[in-house]
Length: 161
Image 1 (spheres, rainbow, N blue to C red):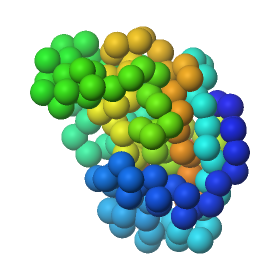
Image 2: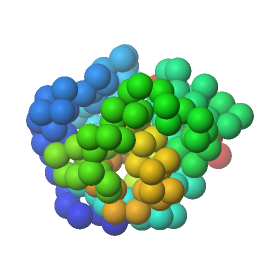
Image 3: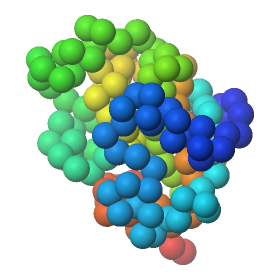
């Protein structure tokens, strides 16, 4: 992942509002384990190798992945006909453009799992259409306790040593 710039949480929230994000930073009880004022935020460009640590939100998306891992790399090709994915694939430009940047949380921007909290359908369509996440633009918000949030998939949790 290439960090393009450090940004403020307010910049991320403005993007959430502009894209009508279903899940927002701090929402769905995220703020219980991760206070908003403790997040670091970055504007990033994903690299091909990030696919190994990129996860969908654990709220129904597991069913779209092989073995229910929630890993974007495990997204099943058979979901393409699903209406929402097909609509995204028909309308989106790939790689996903800045105005549709994917929203991600992580415990560590350098090597931690990357959990998509909004833009899951865009990420699935991107991967299914292009077989890569290289050059996808995203916001990554980092908090050391994000693994405590209930929507982080089991494989995406960082275990305390």
